[in-house]
Length: 78
Image (cartoon, rainbow, N blue to C red):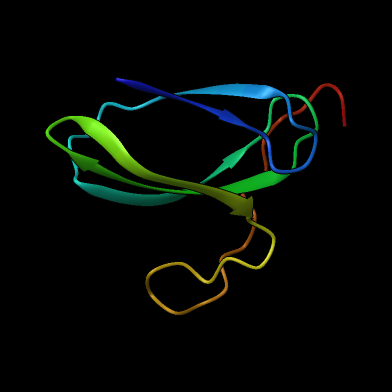
């Protein structure tokens, strides 16, 4: 199953491959267009998305309570 979201910053469509079968997930995904971090939270029930939230990932503390350092990706447009 793949998630399709709109980037929180530039509103471009982002397709995120999802190979995990968790009922709840929270993670950062950098936009391929504007390179900004999107905090994505979703819940699944019977393999259907029941709750999806996309916000700014700039201040994400993560599940462990510490401020996560941004992942450095090679971006040809930044």
